[in-house]
Length: 395
View 1: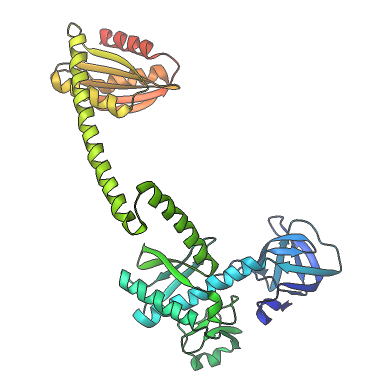
View 2 (view 1 turned 90 degrees about the vertical axis):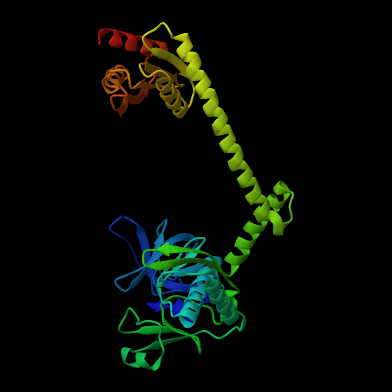
């Protein structure tokens, strides 16, 4: 089989003969041709897509020496006209070559070797073998990488034997021992690679590092190249325009304005939290007054947060140490309850909650002084309180 993508990675259309069609073990239909410009998944680069005689090619894989074109319907016998999705191929060439350049920049400047590469749909990543990466180091690598791009250096490919490897300053040993394909940027990068690449570095257009993070013993660097840089710029510019309008601040002041709003929001949130605590304390006192002639405090609420109900129960038991509190929260489709007893009470809330959960087919748990649970709304909140009264009267 002739691999046209190695002869000329700029071939967009070609003609071939259909050798055979078959299905794989998963029942997926594929076609094998006598020659192809479709690049199969491999070498860190995703497969091409396109059409064969107008039939969509959804995946391309090399299996047992043959390139399989996975198609949606059978092809007719005879001559095949193939057309690859050039925008996808060019994008992959830009990202893959940009990775070579960026990896070489990190290696040259900081002796940080790339241990893995992922060409994603929107973002590419490399894992470089280092414990830390600072802003200055990342910026320096990006500057050097773009310098190589702007110099528009030629990119050469060459097939060599294992015996010839020592003639080239490779960044790492190839994963194969025969039919070794080198991708060479003279005086900068020599790398064993089976992917497709443009004829010069200038066609990568530009390289931009977006972010990085610790990944086990390495640093994972996120980056984009070529047309993806313009896409990222467009998306970020759109967001920046929205922020400058919303914050009524010029671009250079957006970060400071946003930080002030965040700090003000935190202060406001704390103030609201304190006010809510005061209101819950007041509510706890009111409930104690309402139930001053009863053995326990019981109430049904509607659509309240369970956190508020929990806090309210605790405040009541803090104010009245001999109290037993049962609070039910009725939502649209379920019931929640909280049971609490003060330090002066010997009532067992864990036991009470277990019996209540059995009444509503619910789930929950807790300890002897505080328990909670919830379940489907098969009965009303008032009916659940009535069951509570029955249980407490027996105990």
